[in-house]
Every structure is written in structure tokens, then in C-alpha cells.
Image (cartoon, rainbow, N blue to C red):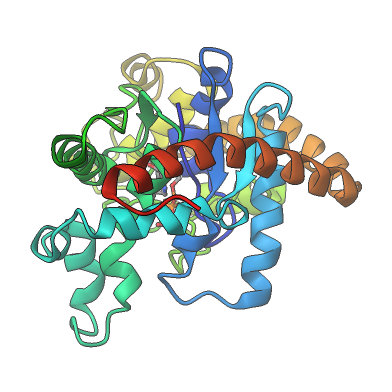
Length: 325
Ligand code: ATP
Ligand code: LTN
């Protein structure tokens, strides 16, 4: 299996509850790869110094939440040159029309218009397909927002295999059922995202406990004072129940039944989140004190990933008729 994280901002509680905690379990079930997909981060405005430090920070967050570099392969995408190389081969398999129709491209290019959008925003899903196809991956755990990208990956793999002969494993998406989509605390109709400029609505994995408490206590709730799990009618309260349910391992309906007022729900959620994050923050602090170790982990990860990627790339290049060296 393989899944990726973009270094576009600090890791959020949404990343942790919707993805990273499952990765920590998945690493034991399969040969698991976790790239920090820095090339993907270049599709949006990110300051070069920030990108460098976020790449290291997210690596340490992944290790702090339990990804063990002796069990899985943890690496930085740009350290493995086969990612952009396979992307080119797959761009010549994909069509301009299918990329242009991708929801994410339409959304993200809507603001400045297509003329302003970076070309990388258009080809981003092909890079993601290369990330996956390079490693003969069966399963790709991602959030629901990535479903369309996975469909494209499957289409490209099948088209390539049909045109040039069996080359790629066709992967399956795996969307966590209890994955929980965590919403922004200030705007519970939009998701909590690390690149969104909403510091008060976003709980970061490395936030100070005091900040976490303040953000959760000031979360936007809904009109009508009753506590009920109803995403349409009560998005704010439902989000708090989702968060509390995820960090305590309790079904949201049970939680909803045990609260009558917003105040205690917020206080308990804040306390539970702080307690949930504390061991992660402690492990992060220990890793941050030893940057040399983190670099060694990434070196080993890249070498291991490249070993696998080189074989697949060579297979694909040969299938398309590129002359071997
Ligand atoms: P960005 O804000 O740059 O788009 P992001 O925070 O959405 O980033 P990604 O790096 O794109 O995060 O995704 C990492 C993983 O975290 C993905 O599997 C994604 O589905 C999951 N994820 C991100 N935000 C949330 C959220 N609010 N709730 C649940 N899962 C989430
Ligand atoms: N597009 C994904 C990040 C991503 C990814 C991948 C996920 C890039 N390459 C490969 C799974 C597999 C996102 O925005 N969350």
C-alpha cells in the first residue's frame, strides 16, 4: 500500500484523524510506503524555506504518530527521480481533456482562470498516478476527496497495459469508513486543511494545549441548544462529536445522548484532544532534538524506494519503446 502527504502546511487534526492514525495500523499489514509528496506542494504558492522545513517537520510528525521506518518506507518524493520520469510517460498516456475535467483542477483554477493556473495543477493527478504505479501498489488509503484521482490512476494503468502490454498493477482506493472528515472549527461546512488560512478553525497536531483548548471552546456551533449528530442541520456540533468520537473511540450517537449542552461538550472535546495529542507531541520533541537521525531515515527510505521504482520505470520505458541504455 501507499499513501502520501503534501508539505503545504503544518499537519492538522484532520490529517491525523482522517489518515495518519490508519497508516500507523496499515504499515503492519502490508509493504507500506509513505512519501512526503513535496513535488505536489509546488502546485501552490509555498515559500522555499517553508517547504524545506515543512518537509522535515511532516516526516517527524509521521514518525511521532507511529510510522516506524524499520517497518514501512518513509521517503521524500523528490529524492526518487523516477517519480517525474514516469509522470512524463503517463502524461503521454493521459489526455488533455480528462485532466482538464478533474474537479480539483476546475476548483483551484476557477479563481484566477485557466490562463493563470500553473500547468502543474493540471498535471498533478498524473504525478499522483506515477507515485502509485511505480510501486506495484494494491491499495491506496485516501480521503473521499481523492477518489477521482484514484479513478484516473486506474484508468491510466489499464490504458497503458492495454496499449503496451501488462506493465502496471491496477490499484484499488480504500476510503476509510470511520475515517471521519474533520471540518474547520470556524466554518464547519468546509474541511480542516493544512494549507487553508484559518488558524483559529484549525487544530494543528503540534499546537500548544492552551491554543487547542481556546480553538475548540470558540468553535462555531449551531442555533438551537440541543446536542444532536446531524451534519446537515448541525454541522458545528456534529463536527465536535466526530472529533470527540474519534479520539475516544466512542460512537457519535452514544456521545450525543450523553450531552445536553454545548459547553460541556466543548470542554470534554478540548481535554480529550489535548490528551490524545500529548504522546505524539512528546515523541515529536524527542525526534526534533536529533535531526541527524531523521536525515538518516530519509536517506534509507529514498534508497529503498528507488530500488523498487527503478524496476517499474525501466519496465514502462521499455514497453513504450524507449531504447535501454
Ligand atoms: P491541503 O490543505 O494542502 O490540501 P490537506 O490537509 O488536505 O492538504 P493532504 O496532504 O492533501 O492534506 O492529505 C493527507 C491525508 O489527510 C489525505 O488522505 C486526506 O484525505 C486526509 N485529510 C486531510 N484533511 C482532512 C480532514 N479535514 N479530515 C479528514 N481527513 C483529511
Ligand atoms: N493528492 C493527495 C496527495 C497524494 C497522494 C499520492 C495520496 C499525492 N500522491 C499518492 C495517495 C497516493 C492529496 O491531496 N491528499
